[in-house]
Length: 278
Image (cartoon, rainbow, N blue to C red):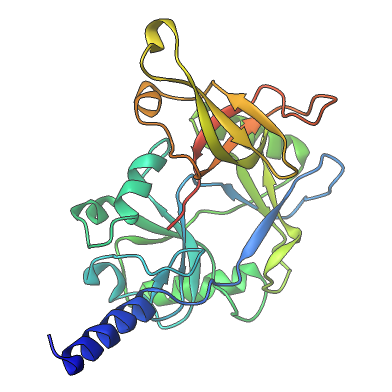
């Protein structure tokens, strides 16, 4: 290849890279709900265990700013305004969702994916008004795989706990509470809360402990490091498939736990999933 051809090839590679990566979107983040908080009258919805996706009006982006390799039919009828939501199939299928959406080329699995919206970024008014913009759009332009996550009004703490119990009994992840009168905001604040019976956090896989007995030749536990440098093993929560092919060293995982030891180690840590790295 001559010098001109090399330059053109390099330009094309750069063009593709720029086309598939944008600045990471500034997203709304959730704060942990506390029993002392009064959320009567707030919007309440299920927290879906999907892959976060931000539609900027032109591209469907991950939280890191990478463009999903979705089929054209999946995005061509999305509105020109922004959307924030979850790519999802159903409960307890996160690994399948992640596998489909992390492909570098359009995948037939997208036929099973729905885009479930909980926010219309940068729209005016409170949450009902912002979601109403999308609801009006869908009346004019129905899109089968584009949905608004159902919201109900939280009457009181008993209503909240009863709904949480029902969702968890159905293998749901938890709930999200939103202040309906709050204007759109990004980052972490007190107008968007996650409600779970257990805490969760993230850690990085730095190694493994070999399995014993029926797990001989497989992974017995993940050697994990959390922020602050604390290291410990997580052996529960792993499926046989995950023990056979564990998360790679360097990957960030999410695990649940109950409080901390005196040494700052999460108690009863249990693996949940590999964090989306798309």
